[in-house]
Amino acid sequence: MRPAEALAWLDAHVNLETGVGVPSGVDRRRHSPTLARIEALTALLGSPQLEFPAIHLTGTNGKTSTARILTALLLAEGLSVGTYSSPHLQSVGERIALDGEPIDEVRLAELLTRIATIEEFLDDRPSYFEVLTAAALDLFAEVAVDVAVVEVGLGGTWDATSVVRAPVAVVTNVGLDHVEYLGPDRASIAREKAGIVTEGATLVLGERDPDLVPIFTARRPGRTLLAGRDYSVVGDRLAIGGRAIDVATPWGTHRDAFLALHGPHQAENAATALVAAEAFLGGPVSEEAVEAAFASVRSPGRLEVVGRRPLVLLDGAHNPDGLRSLRAALDEGFAGGARTYVVGVLAGRDPDEVIAALAPDPGTTTIVCCRPPSPRALDPEALAAAARAAGLPGDSVRVVPEVADAVRVATAGLDEDEQVVVTGSLYVVGAARAVLVGA
Image 1 (tube, one colour):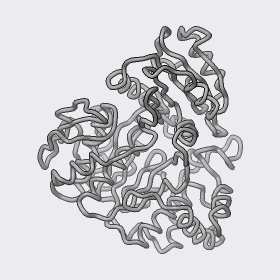
Image 2 (cartoon, one colour):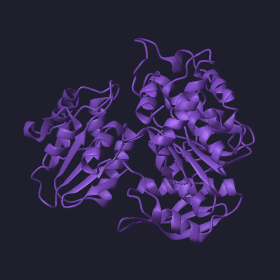
Image 3 (tube, one colour):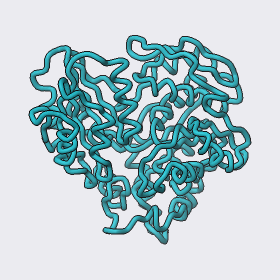
Image 4 (tube, helix red, strand yellow):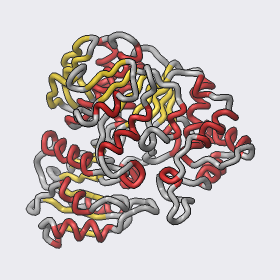
């Protein structure tokens, strides 16, 4: 298939991320959780997931940034690395990377064509995410990567990525998100995420809640490396273009490393990635590799600066915890002029919680409410109503449904010391990035 044909074939599959193809009132993941489809698909491909070791990541926030940092560290140590992450910002190929570089549309089409030729032999048609997961695993086996960094799509136990062979499992944190799929409280969500931990594996656990830790250790990992006990950020300072951090791990302390990412939460992500790399390698990452990896890492759409004077930031925070981390990062590193938020969220989010997490200042904040380009989008009028209820005057709240138009409205006529922050959903950030950065 040609690239356009391959993407059209992929889009014809049930997509739980967007809701496309999911019959009304039916939730395949919650009502019939199974790995049968991905297991059958990978079996027809020759079980590629058994051809390489993986580092498997889950967590409510920070997975993708942690995966990117981890990939950079392993590359700096001379390993060949396949990386699988989701969702994408602008193109599907971003989800599958070799040595840090996303595959192009031609290679993606080749992978999808291979799966299309065997799909007819399956009893149950796989989902969009299962197809892409199989495609990534097939490619990683084909090129014989030394290690795959594999990010969970949702949860853990029943996620398609759970077919990988992972001697190291990473959990960044546990928050309230996707409760319709994972359960109504943090304990339920933790149990789902704990499913990536196989008996005897090394668990790198960024979640510190003492009530949740036993849920993960009950999976009987061979070793548990717990944030705050076995590894930690012992120094974290603002630096031009990022942060200067000190990280202590069981294998030593790395001091004054420049991390080219913004926000104090990224220091925690870097520490988690570093200890995961060292756990996989069985020893310390060299100072030279840490310096090279931290200084070179990029995480598009995560506190990404895409414009200056006025400052324009993109951040895919999509739940209250993520939005609070965004606000803390803005207060620390980007305080100053009047701020305009471009915000759009998916249905299921509480508009009042979204606005409260951003904590807009009625005197200096403008909010432009838009609609994420997704069938699951929340009506932007609901966000606007929440903003007004929070005390923002009517002329500070605007509804501009299309993301591209909202970005143009937000950035028009600003003074050099003002700023625009685009957030609320990776769908919004991806669409805004296409306008502000291009393809």
